[in-house]
Image (cartoon, rainbow, N blue to C red; front, side, top):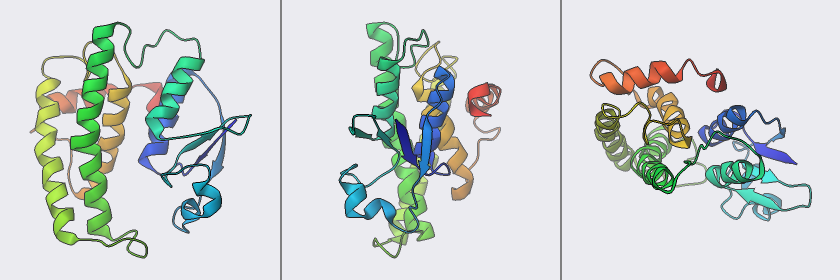
Length: 202
């Protein structure tokens, strides 16, 4: 079993933190995304979305999408972390907030970065106006999370979950877009300081 990844990417970081929380070590193999290795036919046979990370199992099965990889490890590794929630209500709340943070936070962040930086301009059409709009949507989303964290210790409730990992990775991406967690977002700032103390993110 091994992870095909690039450790500098947010998606790989999310899986790495999740594995740290469960205390799991997995062999890793670097994928050259700048050189478009993930767009090769050989890679696309493993991951139809052409994205990293990809988990390669011993029997040759491949799993792409970082949350799907996390779900596999959570289900296949006995643990009491309940990172996807312990009760039906918790599981629904985790799924709900995971979707909210992904669609209203992570997706706009990636769209803003790719379109403003032109990082992949050799393989995709970058639209500066869309990058600026995406950045603004992300900026407007941060107070939504701040409001939620004024009600609960962690994003999806009183239990630490994969949503907190996703938000942490998103916050680590903010400086690339000239955004930050500051005093205007006091609850998010409190959460961020709390997160920074977890061994899994250090």
